[in-house]
Image 1 (cartoon, one colour):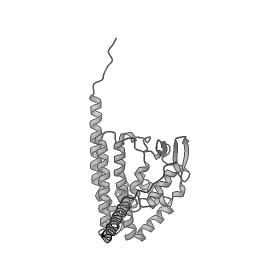
Image 2: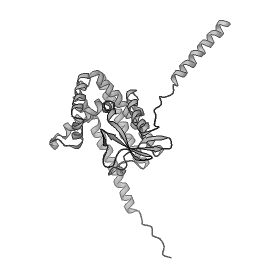
Image 3: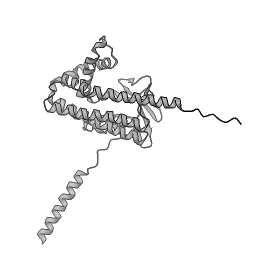
Length: 278
């Protein structure tokens, strides 16, 4: 009987230990200051928890938090893809990082803006190159240039993000603001046209959510292709990104445009209420 009781106690101890291990509390990241927000972003990447980067962004309502959570899942999928790329194409990745370091990221800026003397006919190639750089090493820039990131005082509850001594997104700025439960990176709602793009209704949140879900699924497919040997180079990775995301992105943007047109038409047709004359 004693052996039976001892065995039961041992088994119960093992069960409790396993459950305690499975319910391990998530790692805590500080938002106690603007500087800590930036440091937490770097630590999340270093700890392979890019999925949690969205926790550092302020959500003004439940719908936005749900959307940001979906964005976080897409960021986590990109993190997994970058690890697969580092394992399969280490030399190509090192060469790409060296080029970005040499030109200070200027080539990426040119690809984003279309500058650099390339014809419009090369837009597809430019997009493939940009996609390759983003999906192959999405967080390398953050890890390698942490020492160039800083904040600048704007107001008691607001700081701007700086890179290499320059304010990001000039002249509007990328802000970190204090809320009731800490400091958060703010969505750039002050950028021209941002309010026309950011979601406001349930339908708009669903549209944006579907876009990031498509991104997550596509990136996971790309990761499987890299690990399975179906993608054999980083150039092919860029082409794969175009093939997987170009059509879905166009479809979502088309649906978004139609939705906005319908909203504007409804607003124009709404009868104007006049105050009765006393």
